[in-house]
Amino acid sequence: SSTLRRLLNNMRELDERSQ
Image 1 (cartoon, rainbow, N blue to C red):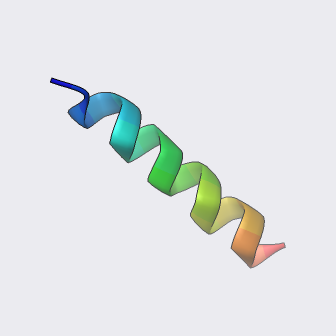
Image 2: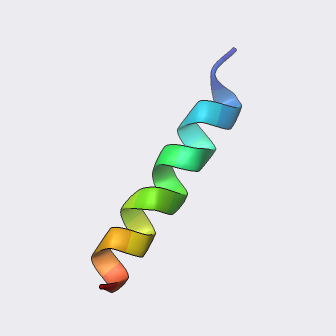
Image 3: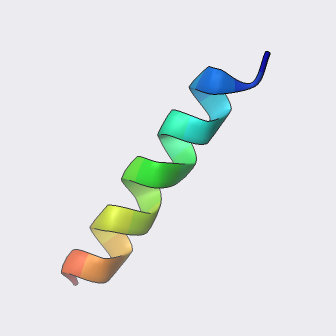
């Protein structure tokens, strides 16, 4: 149900970790 939200969250986490 919240697959899109989970994906977006994952991407955001990766971006934050990259920085």
